[in-house]
Length: 167
Image 1: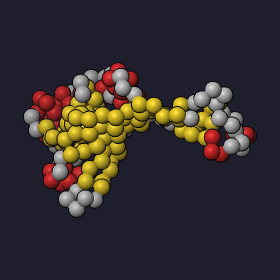
Image 2 (image 1 turned 90 degrees about the vertical axis):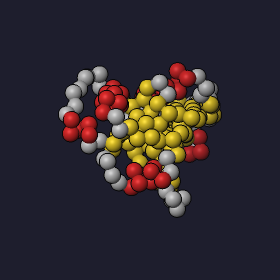
Image 3 (image 1 turned 30 degrees about the horizontal axis):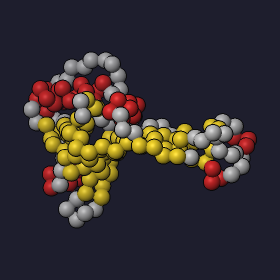
Image 4 (image 1 turned 135 degrees about the vertical axis):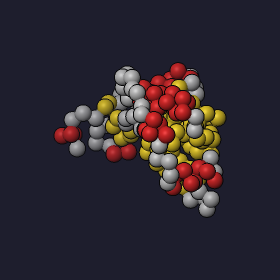
């Protein structure tokens, strides 16, 4: 089974839009890695996130705003031969984005970011109370570098695992 790079912007954006969570990686001042699963929104090369106003991630990003955000589609178990363990793989697509997190403090921009985040999950429109907007921390990352892969691509003769009785 093979792994291939994904180069086309549309395919990369399709992977991002297919995902329901992302994983945000950062490193504190002692070079200790810290990774969080988060809800997100994406539009025009910018990833939007939201959180509480304070916490470990905010302290970490205040000192080092460089971050890595990873997306992965729902994996599918595949194999080339049902009785050969080494032929089993997960088929999925992933996108890894690098950039600098900035915190958005302007009220209208925070509302815009919240709407973009909500569009990742629903096509409904929302109104936000003043305290809700003021009390949320909005993160924005312009993507500086992106790498995308499709892995576990089946070769001729491969099948998807469907029948548990094969084990």
